[in-house]
Amino acid sequence: MMTGSPAALLRNAITKRLGVRYRYRGTDDRGYDCSGFVWSVFKETGADYERGPARNLWLQLPAATGQETTQFGTLVFFNKLRHVGIVRDADTFYHASRRNGVKLSRFAGYWKRRITGFRRSPMATFPHHSMSAPIE
Image 1 (tube, rainbow, N blue to C red):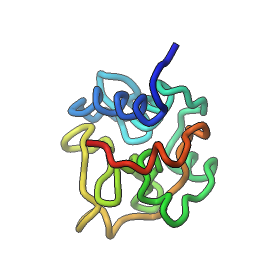
Image 2 (tube, one colour; image 1 turned 180 degrees about the vertical axis):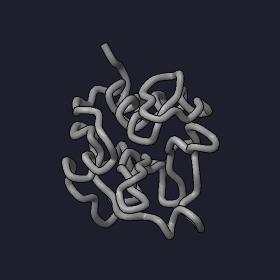
Image 3 (tube, rainbow, N blue to C red; image 1 turned 120 degrees about the vertical axis):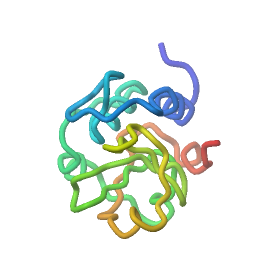
Image 4 (cartoon, helix red, strand yellow; image 1 turned 135 degrees about the horizontal axis):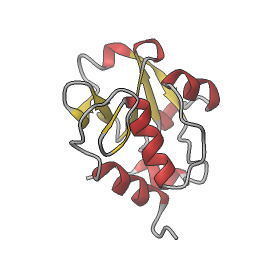
């Protein structure tokens, strides 16, 4: 049985994957691609959805609007739906980078210019107040 707030569970699932290498179609600690990383952390925290490419998630989840776009757990999509990550706060997000594996990146510069949009977290049980605090 999982204990802790949904945000704490998600934070822990992400933290233990930081630094794991990139692997195409990877969904475990041998390596992750971007959607495999997102799927694995949300699966670990209790979200139940089928693993698929970023484009599928975009179609399945409702749009995040306003403040939701900067809340922890919101999904951020890039490069015409070819890449996905998890928002940490207004400035940063987690993702599986081809060069550096699972990492925290800044939106500024390169990534900001490539944002396609945002979708709500697959964890429908997340209360908004749990997701608004930045993760340290």
